[in-house]
Image 1 (cartoon, rainbow, N blue to C red):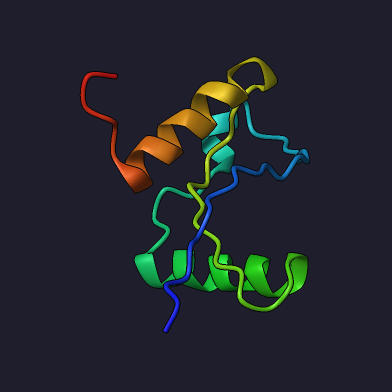
Image 2 (spheres, rainbow, N blue to C red; image 1 turned 135 degrees about the horizontal axis):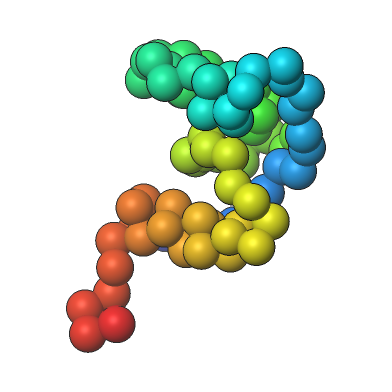
Length: 85
């Protein structure tokens, strides 16, 4: 039996939200449970990708100039940092 090879491909969902709160932080939930996060990942995988694709997300609000850094942090969180890197 041939071993399957997987590749992780960073992606971003771009959008905005509108709020009347005085600060962005007051609009963001901080009590997201692991079960809710898993459900959100499953929904994204089911509605945006074809069957067999798994999604891992780290929900956060990131200014555009910091998006690349945020993707790198998520990649390191999931796959670990390479030694000597």
